[in-house]
Image 1: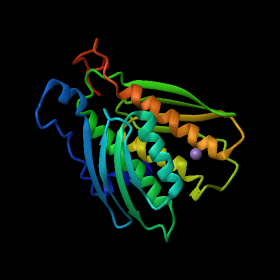
Image 2: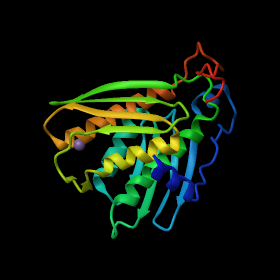
Image 3: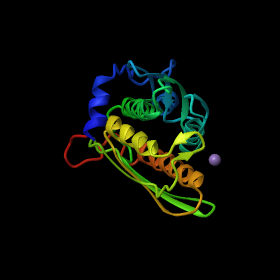
Length: 226
Ligand SMILES: [Mn+2]
């Protein structure tokens, strides 16, 4: 994770705090966990907004169509709202753009969650997609670690360099300070492998971020620190 952490520190992250409902109603607060991001480096510029308590709406543009497809799935299956515009040095390589989108999203999740009191903290999902089965497990633990096993045997999925899916999750886990494990158990189609993993990831994150009314304001840790 050292590289991801360094990158996260290097980037002029300007992820803002959660925007509250203008009316400040109870309903507004309950639905108002969101964060704007505007992350600029010499390699990429990534701006947008993530709402954790959204309706699955999205407006995404990264210059890599397959990555757009995955981020759209992420918003829809997570029940998030996501606007994201990334402009990166794709003429060099897709690496910076894909990794930095992961970092920007991770920073947005971290900011939108705030104190993390009352959330489930951990979540998992097992996602089938036709012949493929993928698992994602997430712990919003404050400790960054990504474990990714996609069983990909191709260099590209659509227009996306396949190995960069790993870098996306490295970037996300590093910036969100989360444990993110994603694994494809079996399957044939590489398209399905990556897509099932993003769907599982979104749905696991949705559970991890969700509030448990019973926990109310309790910090979901016996350490007293997250
Ligand atoms: Mn697809």
